[in-house]
Image (tube, helix red, strand yellow):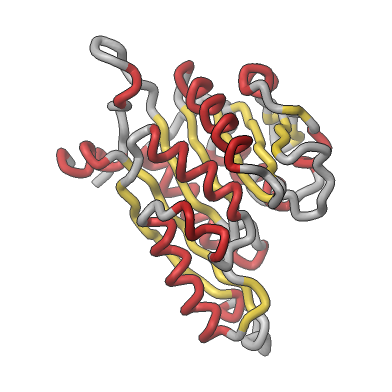
Length: 251
């Protein structure tokens, strides 16, 4: 199973050129889903123990970004200093605004886990506003794809699913959203009940360009699973891995 989740062939690299290892994952950032996030990181660590870089893509929850897409690459104080990926931020050619990531839980929910599971990795955050255009996302995708040429990278889409709906309705919406994501139906993301549709577009474009189109849904949950008496207004969560079809076929 582990071998099936490792990826070494990216079509864009050409003959005779070894592709870097890349792992993609969907993760919640809602605090009550902490157990799911921990399980995801443990699963990734088992198949990819030493990423050189972790990229976290998430939404601008509090509208602090000065541009539609901004990066963050400052150092983080975990049990040891978790180094910000200043080199990656520079090479991405995206506008850098460190304070956005430092004050948004779409990133901060992941920092302690990155520090625990991948303490040697550098961290690059990509924060995306809902107003980001398709052209801006395409350019960001091209920049990140080029960035992945220089080392082993874990790419996390930090995104919760449905919000503020009764549990039954939330579960139905989440099933629809996950099918859209697993099928790479980019045009339908804007109508999906997810809290980072533009980040999801960037992430899925990047996964498709890298050949990581085999999806594995690991876990699903709803905030009502953890919070008693709150089944009328809930949040949905899921964890998912993105792998290479060739590796799954050979595993």
